[in-house]
Image (cartoon, rainbow, N blue to C red; front, top):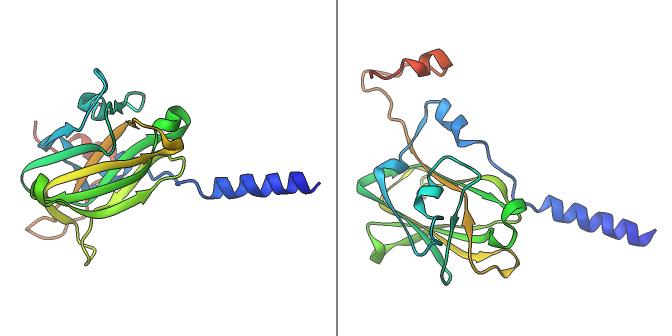
Length: 197
């Protein structure tokens, strides 16, 4: 009896400590308060297995992934041509599929270039399965302005060597209208016709 109780408690504790998934970033976009700006940046990786690089990290397909092919830390570098306001990073990781390739410790750094990057977030992930939302804000809770973001995978689950990341999205806040504040249209009909083609 004690054995089963002990096992039940152990399983319950393990489940409770898992990193909870965040909402699908497409829901963020539908609110009209943020816009994905990853396409405005130049992306580079510290290493990658052939056929598992930046294209797979940015293809909107949760079945594909970047796979590193070198020593830790594994780096994703996101460089903008001008200083850019960034509010949130969204990273998709899947422990069920990737096991020891799943990141367990991630550092997020920002700066003007490779030489002055400063860590602004460090995350400990426990068997993540879904989107991880990383707010990029300063000490006053305002979105940061930066030329460069670097995501460093410092460790993987089960001491894995290489890493998998399935998608990364970068979001900027949508500016309010200079004419005045108007309610944002978020219906599907409005979204279809909101831009001039």
